[in-house]
Image (cartoon, rainbow, N blue to C red; front, side):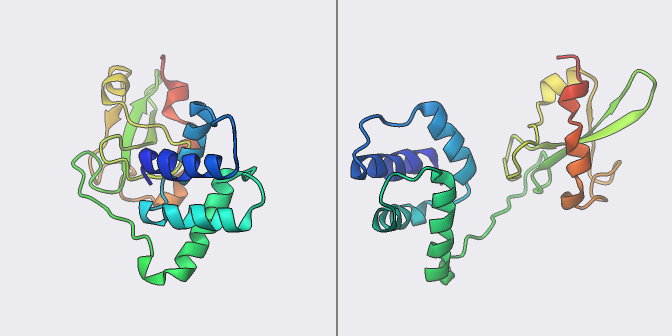
Length: 172
């Protein structure tokens, strides 16, 4: 879902329906949007209608409510199952991740994973974005496909690498 649809269709309609005098702050809307951004736009009005039909008040946990309604939408529209669209990105080869190595002062290499900022196909929250200029200036080298762990570690097993992000090791 894009931010415009989220703000104009979901937030404005729900605030008007539940007579909220104060529109949620931009920071709150941004936090909510980050949690629901992978829901397709085409389900937005159906979700709003369903929330209005089932909730007596403005939802206390809006992202959870939206995800619940989206699951109902998928059940009632099985032909509209959201399909993940992958593009062939030149920076990450289409998997959404950039792998890099940073050699510490003792000469030990440490491999890290980042989200690709070009295609933004990785959806996990908490993985930092690759900043080529800043990370390369700090000594990180981007790995090509086949180098280091790139392509040898299943994406589900990358959590150990992400837990100690390169941002903690960098001097900025």
